[in-house]
Amino acid sequence: MSLQSPKEIDGVLLVDKPMCLTSHDVVYRLRRKLQMKKIGHASTLDPMATGVLVMLIGKATRRVPRGEVCND
Image (cartoon, rainbow, N blue to C red; front, side, top):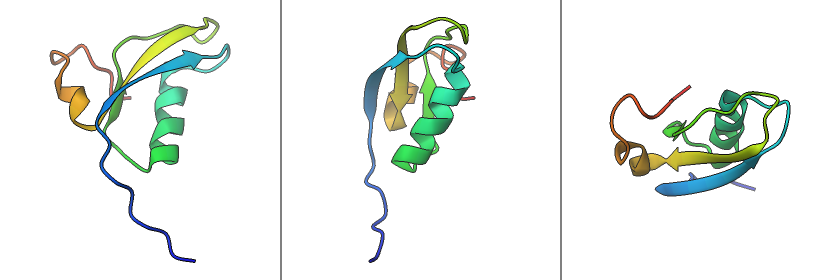
């Protein structure tokens, strides 16, 4: 079985962040799952908080003003 290289993905993904994960943990897991490096988040949630975390993928990371995206 051969693995195909991942296709380029660009866009915004809303993640319902569970308690006990940091925003960086969500970035790390998405990078592994999507096999991409260019992923960041447009907001930060406390590890004990739950809620919507805005994830920016690929070229979408350029849509937010510099300094507003966290590329942990």
